[in-house]
Length: 265
Image (cartoon, rainbow, N blue to C red; front, side):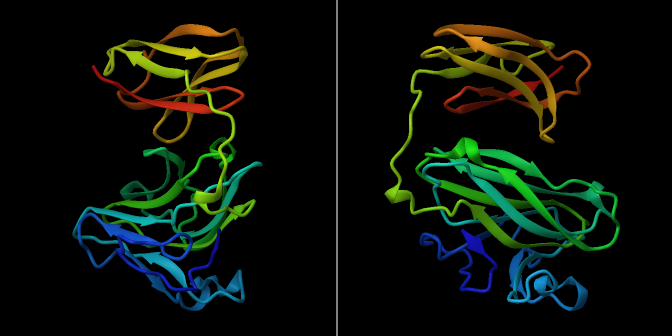
């Protein structure tokens, strides 16, 4: 995928075709949603890529709470590592009022994989970002969603989306090794103070078990060792952490599993 938004962009098209159509969804039906615009003057992506004219732009509303979503076409990697690169035009002047997130859909499950950082720059500027997608290799059908969320924030623009190595048609990908018998769950969920995380692995492999918050920050690592085939459990005590949603990430040599958990008091 190599998208500069200078081709045809079809909006709210339920029959989007592979690598031809991007889709937008506005949860609040505001005019301040994703649109393809030729940004002017110093804000134009032309200064970074002279062949580029249009960018995807999302305006900021002061009257409604926005949830503006921009969906990529579906794609797959096949073999090898995968990396996503993209540019964002933004300002951190009202970062407390909005968030800009990237989600990925894999096997009918959405996971948040990136959050726009507050870099303290209060003027609009283009900045390039990189997200490692290697754990999604061999997955037959992936989809990205950039989401603008908040009220009375600042405008956002997206451009120069590139996936390396080039993505391929999902229908022509032969899947790699599967680990069908591993799983991850926790109990209780929601939990108060502590929860037990249980998982199984089908053969000897290196296992890492992490807890992340919704900002993508690692809270703790519960396991980092080689384990034999079998079932295991670890208890996480959340004392000292704020209540809310957390993510358990189980990483083996073959794949990654993610479980959302809820800490309440």
